[in-house]
Length: 331
Image 1 (tube, rainbow, N blue to C red):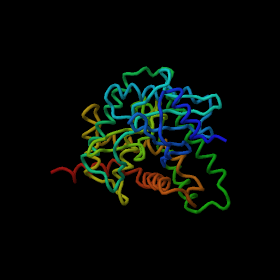
Image 2 (cartoon, rainbow, N blue to C red):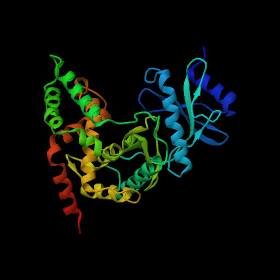
Image 3 (tube, rainbow, N blue to C red):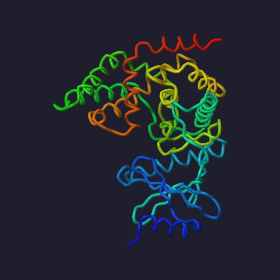
Image 4 (cartoon, one colour):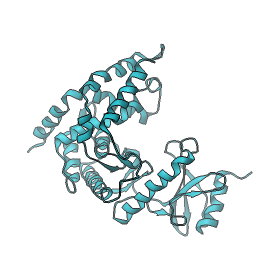
């Protein structure tokens, strides 16, 4: 019986003209499978999309998102070069297997303990340039378009009420506390908050796992298959939480480095950074405050949870914290 690797190797030869060596599994990713291989002296990455995670109806949206990645790469944004099949980024086999082929990108992943100021400035600049280039693309028909602030707020309240009214009897006390702590924050939010935030096509997953650096610059932004129309500052808030929140406090110099890089292309103030953190909470709080995460979960998932708990606890004082950041960072 043929393995998935055998099927992919044969199709890479027949459909792409690539005579590949052994497909070697690559760790990482959520349910999707990845392999690296060598073909014609070139190092390639093969990504197969999970049938459990993605329904056939979503493939057109994923394909459109990857087409936008191809445009960004042509514009000079550091992201993987996709080898298209008949001018499309996705290859769909008769048995329903969906995969794509990319050139392997050099670089290493950094985290909040290893990233440097120069790398953060580069990340801010790449993020700003990416948003600038995304703004040149048509938005009509992009997944997520348009955004209605009233609906966003209503969905947050609906999610909260559903969770609050269905707290399991055996739920950890910490989960109950974290859930109920959301209500005072939700009461401060208004549709106007969501209306005034910048919107456009955004990456939507700028976590450390999707960024490579080499040596002090961003060498690749990965995993564009979630990019869609949304709140641009979610990308910013995710970067700040991932790299500037250390040991329970926002790192002064790191925030400044990222903002300086972003401002190479688009304006961004410390007040904007506070709202970027808030919209990140609004988008991600339903994902990471769940009973199961309080009793287990991977280190990565627990990290996201800790960030949401920190934002919940410091919500009223974000501007003050960022203002103190400016004072402490001023020569």
